[in-house]
Length: 252
Image (cartoon, rainbow, N blue to C red; front, side, top):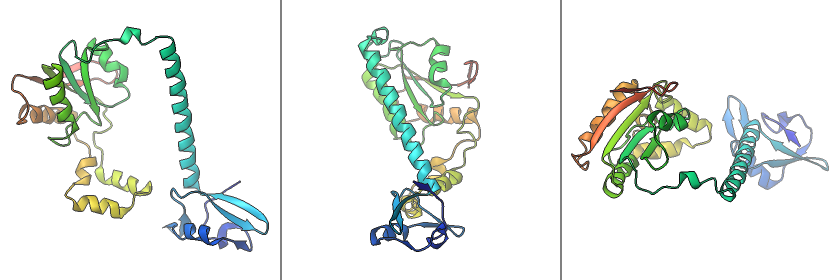
C-alpha cells in the first residue's frame, strides 16, 4: 500500500502508469490547491505499473480514514461498557422520573469541563433538572430548538424556573463565522452549497459566529426569554456565569 500526496499522474514518481477509465473519472474530480491536486473524501483509487497494482491514498484521505477508524473504536468501547453497565444493574442509583424534582431547567454550554462540574457545583442529582446544552448556551433563533425545549419543559414537565448559565473561558467567545466557513470549505463542503444557504436568507457568518462578552451574551439570552411572546410570565428566569475551574456562580 502506498500513501502519497501527488501533483499529477506524471509527477507521482512512476513511469508508464496506466489508469482505467473509472479511476480516471475520479482523478478528474481532484481539487486544485496551489498547483497540487489532492483527493478530498473520494474513495481510494488504483494505479497500475505493469502488472503491479498500487492503492493510492492522499494525505487528506488518510486523515479521514484514521478519523473514521478512531470513531469506530470509540463507539465499540462505549457499546462494550454500556453492555456491562446494564448487566451489572449499575443504572439503579440513577432511576427517577421524567419530571424534574426541583422544577428547574438550565440552559448552558456544551463545554466538556461542565459535564460533571456544573451539576456537582449546583448540588444536582439525576432527576433534579432539565439541562439544555448548545455551543455557548445561547439562543440563535427565537423559535428554534432551545426555546421549544424550554416551553416543553415548562408546559409538559412542570418547570417553574430557568437558569441561563454561561461560563468563563468559553470557546464560543470571539469565534469568527467567516473562519468557520473557510474551514467547512477545507473539509470538502462545496462553496455552491454555502451560497445556496446564503441566498435562502440565512446569515451564515452570524449563525456560526460567537459573542464578544460572556456577560453580555447571558444578559441577551435572559432578555430574549423574558420578552418572548410565548414565554409564560410566571416563570422565573435568571442569568449566571460559572467559573469553569471552580464552579463558582456569579449572577449577571
